[in-house]
Length: 189
Image (cartoon, rainbow, N blue to C red; front, side, top):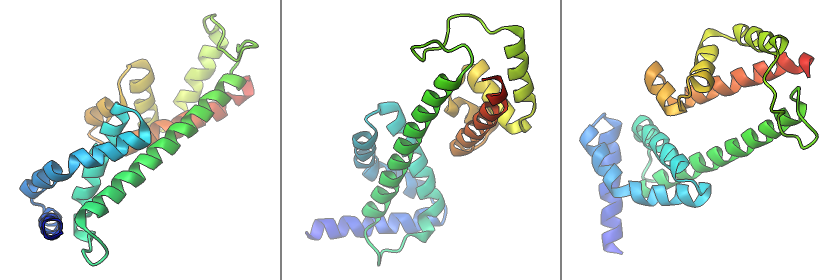
């Protein structure tokens, strides 16, 4: 019991140091907590790569929000565990929304066959022109992220690094842009 209390105090001190911008404290806190936080993300998501992305987001949030940690409300570990759990659940819900959106797009996409699979024929010039037009209507940031993802084959992480933007910002831009493209193409359905 005493060991756990000592560990809690050490981690609370690390968070205070992280809150003041101490990178060494962040590295030490990471070493102490990354494995159990990753485990909870894996349990919720069931996907190694997604759990890694979530944990990266978790530690960015810990770095940014460490000064808001209040030891009177709970231990540093449970505070970080709560962040990991919430981030993982958010990711799972996002994945489920994307799957539903993908299913909807397959059902309403022009050229879909009876099995709701896209037809194996290339796009005609009218479809291509409609897609180009829809993309041109997007804000530059959204269009750029979508082009890098879909035409450049880059991952969200690669796009975030290339544009020097947070991962969440890139994901939001792509999602919003794709929703606008979908709405623009409804006339062609």
